[in-house]
Amino acid sequence: MHVSIPEERPVPLLTELHYDMTDPYAVRLSLGAPATRPVDWVFARALLAEGLYRPTGTGDVLVIPRHRCHPHSVRIVLRSAAGTALVEIAASEVAAFLRQTFALVPPGTESLLIDVDHAVTELTGRSG
Image (cartoon, rainbow, N blue to C red; front, side, top):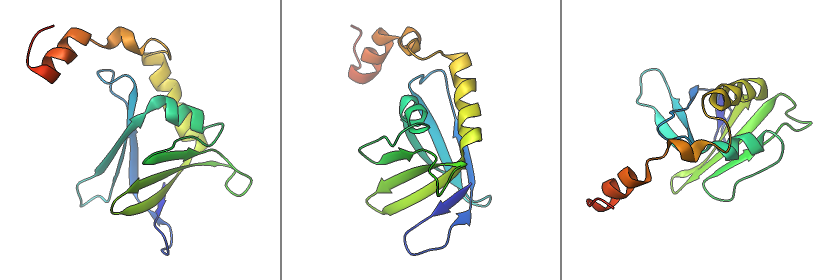
């Protein structure tokens, strides 16, 4: 995977996608060099899935599908107060990752894994 920042050449960077069934709506993109602590971006799994087929996202994370200039890549734009980075990931790797997550938690069934009472207790410090 390659990461680009404005006015710099793209550089290879250790990049991993992660999925945890305890947060079934989200995926985590970890960026980092082997000797550094990774930087994690958490965003909607649905955003990544839709981004395989059409540009999507309106906030800090945008996902842009294959394009004739980049026919084998999905591009993920990450924006923060510190700046913007463009991550290019092989579309086949993103699709394989999503298939694995969908096998664990099919789309539309995520809410079955959420314990709302526990979430309310965690947020408020009181039981519902």
